[in-house]
Length: 125
Image 1: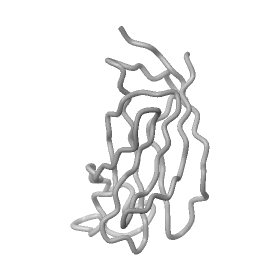
Image 2 (image 1 turned 90 degrees about the horizontal axis):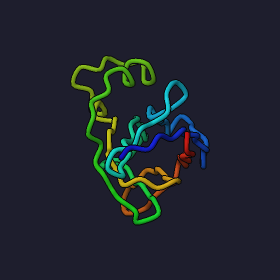
Image 3 (image 1 turned 30 degrees about the vertical axis):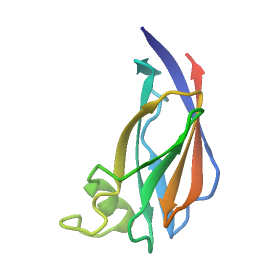
């Protein structure tokens, strides 16, 4: 069984020169479809001065920590305005399949501390 949801995002902190991100998972064009109780969250995050940042995701069940797992040359070129070839921050994207809940919070995890960035709210379509 699949369910369809629309998504709205609420920023919890402002994007700035040291911390920039975007959530690509969006349902402005089409409602999201859940399969087997999971939802895919996609986007990118750039944090200046962080040695090994991770993505933190909190839902109704738990808080999860994921490494960045998608190369985003488009982000390096557009946001940093630098050549993407072999850039040290090329792997700044994520595509994570997580257990669904009506509210999912995303953050930056670094040195054991989490800075919550945005809240995703899912409503039945």
